Image (cartoon, rainbow, N blue to C red; front, side, top):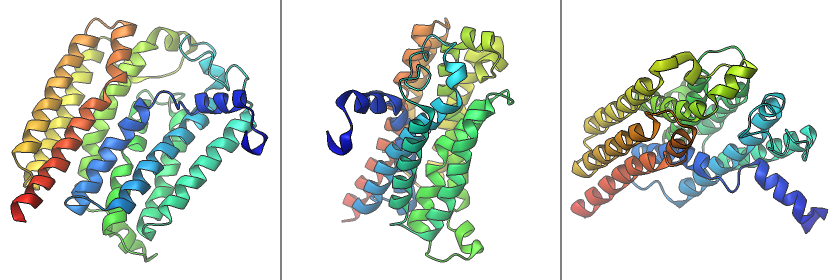
Length: 306
């Protein structure tokens, strides 16, 4: 193996970054690509598509490694996470932090090929991502912090498309229009929905070790809150799409996503571990449906014009 890295060591590193569990990457990717298409009013070009796709993969992987370091003493008390590489000491804290830093640096190099505005906002995104693992220790709804972190690809996409290469603060701020922040708010509700489903899986273990999650904070209102968050996400994105004059394809996609959300209710209403975990694992299809509605709507519009 290159650089003296054994096959077994590589397998541990791949496990650390959840290489075989790409659902988290998809959950980050679809709203980011949706924002790219909206900012560019259609296909954003291969350069930005590659930058944001690879950047999403790298930052999600870096976040997993860093999160496992911060949570190593908590994860050992949770059945689902007790055998993660850092928790089980198969990978040292130093190795995990070095890997996280290397992946984040690679993502930063990708952003450097875009606009200064995107680079500036990426530093804000990194700060929020770093804060999230600590939120569950003092904040009753840490999923809200994750929601901001998982939605920050939206303003980054707008900054990369609409921004300039100026370090003037007003231009950096102005590169992200109000539309991007409204989209971020809507996506925040989606993250609250699916990560509360995720938290419902570990609720019993989390109660024993004393950490805070939305599933614990919401108590018996958890299912109702999840469904309300789905509704808020789809209503807000649907309203924004209508204001942008997206057509019937987008409307059909929003309706399709609503049907998927309704199906998720059948998975989580009994609050079983299996049902809640399945709902979380397949949640990316909901975001994929919305993205397809946006991309196809613009593509059809271009064909109609040309």
